[in-house]
Image (tube, rainbow, N blue to C red; front, top):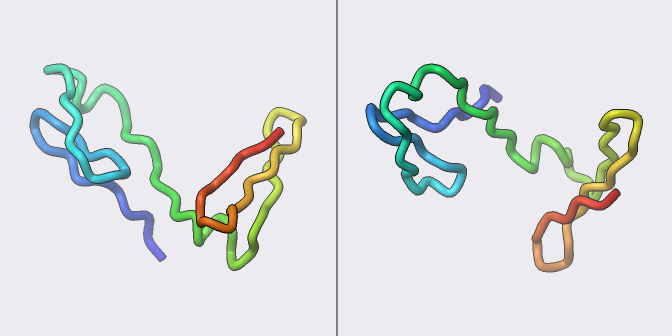
Length: 72
């Protein structure tokens, strides 16, 4: 599945929620947009995954209400 990147407009960029955020003039192309990852791709059908970051293990889990929680 290809990465879905938000569409950039001349004076604004889309957030993950789809709401436009103003961008300062001249900065549109100076910083790349953060990658958007789908939680389904990260979790791959599991309720929790472990993420290794700088030698530390973090737990990303889905609550009963469908929210994501990241714990150290």
